[in-house]
Length: 310
Image (cartoon, rainbow, N blue to C red):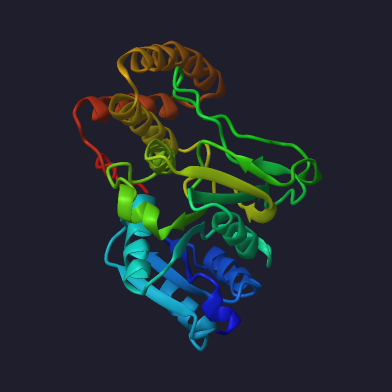
């Protein structure tokens, strides 16, 4: 048996939407991974910037590269689902979801797979996510979920890289770097495409945990992330989806008492955000929040329809 045959087959999914430069850098780093048995699936969400042509010109000769072209923007949930379906058909043992605005260390995948293989009940594995522009500072290293407030504060945020090591048990992972065991998808299903963008990873992690799987972060597997590259941290789309999808998650996943406390907490904290945005002259973010709230109430999910968004 060769070393490749002895190792689980991993398909790394890189999702792109009109951001070919980030995707080129991301795939370049993925192809330098030292794990011996992986393939790369470049999933394009209907880009118009020549992304697919650029990727094929740069990496087309590499037999590990596969391209999946969606006719339209399916969002993060739908785009990743297209990649997952493709990977499962090819016989993947694991699927790694990776944002195209990331760069991975050569040993990251190997470390994450080793963690997943250490316990048959580990369903998801993440790595330590560092700021791309501050490569020694942690942005995200998993999260612990507070069901009373429906919040999942980041573990390790703004700590130095060398302060966190080993394997930690967590409640949720970010979709920017998530290793998923095949059996998990077969049991709990794919990402919920109603979320489109934002909180689809929280909902998926919650579903996985509820089904009895463990979620781990290997703090020695490093990924660098260009935070907010997709729609920004202070954009209309960001606050629209954050509002609508958080309320959807609360409604469908929390028991009655926690659902009530989480909704009260959300309602009480919005005026504080509104005051902050008024002071900053960001009335558009108030509008985004109200639109998200209204669409949640009227059961309008998926891609935002009011104007051309993400």
